[in-house]
Image (tube, rainbow over all chains, first blue to last red; front, side, top):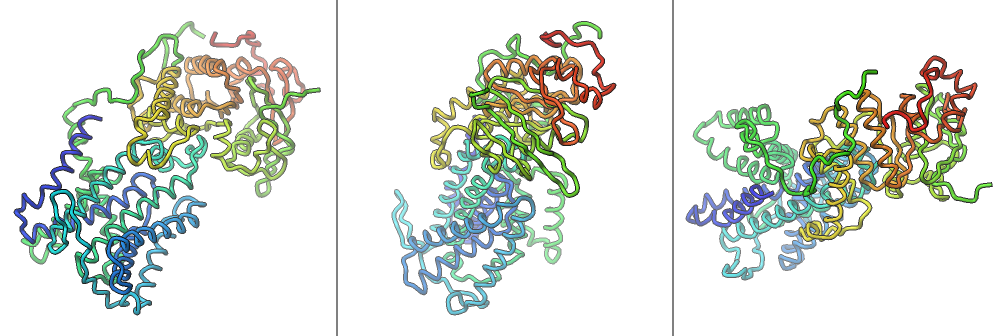
Length: 347
Length: 269
C-alpha cells in the first residue's frame, strides 16, 4: 500500500510543475498538453479494458463525440463552453449505455465488434452531416473555454499552458478516482468480470451492471479529452478520429501497461515524445519507432509500467506483508489444510 | 406428511440437448442443514443438474424451487445472491487476483454499497468494507489459506487452487453450497482434510450438496445420497439404503461398492 501510493501522489504533484521545469517553452508545453490529453484517453480505455476486461474500440469515437458536441454547441448554437462540455460528456454516457444494453447480454468478441461498428457509425455521421459538422473538411473550433480563477491561477485559455492545467487536473482526478475504484467493492467486481465471467456470476456478480458502469465511466474520460482537444487544436476533422488513431491508442496502452495507472501516463508520454526525439533518425524514423514498440511488446508483456516490478523481482526483494489481511493468528492450529500432511498411518 | 418448506426442491426437472435427454424428470428435495451426496456414472447428468439448478443452463422442463419460490428462470448471479452457491469441477479461480482478493470479491456481494463512495474512496473506510475484510480473513483462516493470502491465484498448486475455489464459494455466505467433485485430483491425505473442512463448513450452518466419484469420501460425508443414471433418479436414501439398492448396485458393479462400509462418522475423524 505505502510506497506505490506515495510515489503516485508525488508524481501527480510533480506533473503540475512540468511547465515550470520547461520554463514555459511553447514547444515543450505543447507536447505536455498532448501527453495529458492522450493519457486521459488511454485511461479511458484502461478502465473498460484493463479493469473490467472488455476490449472496446469505441474510445476514439467517444473522443470524437466530445470534440464535435462541444464545438457544435459553442460555434453553431452559441452555448458557453462548460455547459457544452457537460452535455458532450452526457451524450457519450448515453451512447455507452446504449451500446452496453445491446452488447453486454452476450460475451466474448461481441462487445469489441459492436464498439467497432459504433466507431464507424459516428465517423459516418460526422462525414455525412456537413451542415452541422463541416463534413469531411472539418470544423473550425476557434473559441476559448470561459476563463475562471482556480486558486492563485487565472485561467483564460489564451495560452497553451492553461490547457495543460485543465487537462492535467482532469487527468489527476481521473487517476485518483480510478485508483479508488479499483480498490473498492465495485472495482473488485469489475476485476472478477475480467478474470472469469462464469465464476463471477456464480458468486453473484451482475456482469451487465458492472460492465455498463465501467463503460460509462470510460466514456466520460474520453469525451472530456475530446472537449479540451477541440479548442486547443482550434480545428477538428473526421480524419483525426480514424482507425489509425484507434490503433495508436491501443498500442499506447499496451506499451505503457494495460491495467496499470502508471501505464496510461508512461504510454502517452512515449507515444508523444518518442516520434519527436526520433526526428534525428530522419527518414527511418517510423521504422525505428515500430521496432521499439515491437521490442517492448515482446520483452515487456506487462508494458513499461511493469519494469519496476520486474526489476524488483530480479533483485530478489520480496514484498512484505501488505495491508488488508490483519488477522491475528497466522496458521491457527486445528484449521483444516489441503496441503500434504504427514502420513498418519499407511493404507 | 411434510409441512416444512424444503430449502431446495426440484420438480420433474429435465434438460434436453440436441439429440440427448441429459435430465429426465428429476425430482428431489434438500432440507436445511442436510449434507446430500449426488452420485452416478460418468454422463449420468450430475454436472448438468448442477448447471441447471445454479442457472448456468436453462431447464427444458420442470421447476426449481428455492424456499418454495420458483427460481427456474433467474439469471445465475441472482440465484447466487439468494444463497445458492456452487463450485466447479475444475480449478476455477480469478487467476490474476491474489487469494485474498479472490475471497474479498465474494465477501462483498451480498452487502449494499454505493458507486459514489467507491469512486471517492470513502468506501475504504466504510463498515461494509471492514466487515468484508474481517469475513475474508475469517474464511482464509478456516481454510488454512492465510499463508497464501498474497499469492496470485494463477500460481497456486492444483490442490490449493481447488481449496480457493471452495473458499470463494463459502465467502458468499451460502445457505446451500453445491460442490462439484471437490475431491477429484486430490491426494488421499488432501481428501481426508477436505472432508474435515466440509464438516466444519456444515457446522457453521451451511447445507451441502456434493457430487463426487470418491465413494469412501462421499458415503462417509453424506447423510443422504441421490443416485442418478442416464438422466434419471434411480435411488434416494441413506448411504446404507443406497448401498443396498439393487439398481444402484447394478449401475455401480465393481466401482467400490464392495469395499467395507466405513464407520458412521466416516474417514477423516
